[in-house]
Length: 368
Ligand code: GLY
Image 1 (spheres, rainbow, N blue to C red):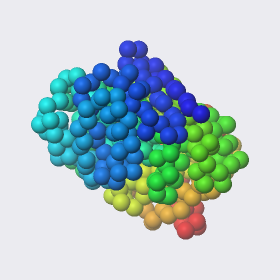
Image 2: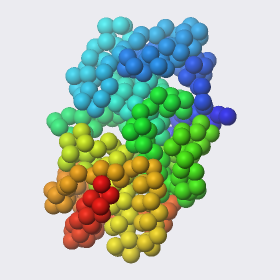
Image 3: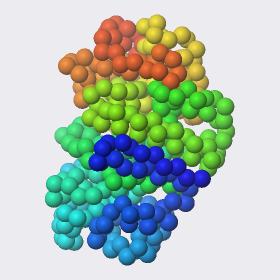
């Protein structure tokens, strides 16, 4: 079974193809998408070995000339030095304005590849082949590209939409358990913000999801990509509803920064952020208690909410102010009205935020 979803952005519209076994046979499709005489394939040695060789063969069967650029994975490489190394390689290998870059990997590869493609000769073609669940359902769609700079995550970046996104859920077979769970946190997020039936999959089929059943994964990924595509189509530059995608991220980003990005994965931090946002929503009487309970129980069932180290609520509060998404000195929260419906709130009183942070610290420590 395969799915095709459109990100509708006028003459920059593009398809997301989702199919088990897609990468080894996507050459003909790529040839239709781009007439580039030469394509740069950006990846890591391990991902190239696992998935890139087959992809490369399929492209070469279409007569596409490939230039391989391998870099190391990990957030610490998402920086200006690696970015300029990629740009220099493109220049040395003679890429012109009609060139194209394929990013095969997780979010770091996609963010670096997208930024390099948007900067080189003021923009060349770009294709996303995400291989982690997090990148498949989130980072590869919507055109955000970035590197971390001056100690701040994603500080320098652009919007550069890909020409297509190729999602092969089979790549998740080799994804480590922690990274898989981190992606699940974002899928749960899509359920909370837009789709109660998607959220219900986690209540009804937790074992199948944890076993990575191919059919259920295809469904979860397709629904998530569909939601993201719709939101991006309506609000590419995050002037309004794209901010819904930040559900759980206000606290999530603050926790990641507070623990220096090494202790919690992105999804683990966002999971605590979602639980916290649900607590706030309940305290502000925006939703009944069972909306909070359902979120906590699904997150816990998926192995999230397992290890939140001790934190200082006042310092976390300060970090939330420093988030680049804090608008005009006000912390912006996405809060839950019911599963499938969220609202943007900019005026949550400080004492309520601090008391919910203290409650989170107490509740989270009970679960360790
Ligand atoms: N990851 C959130 C966004 O793409 O807007």
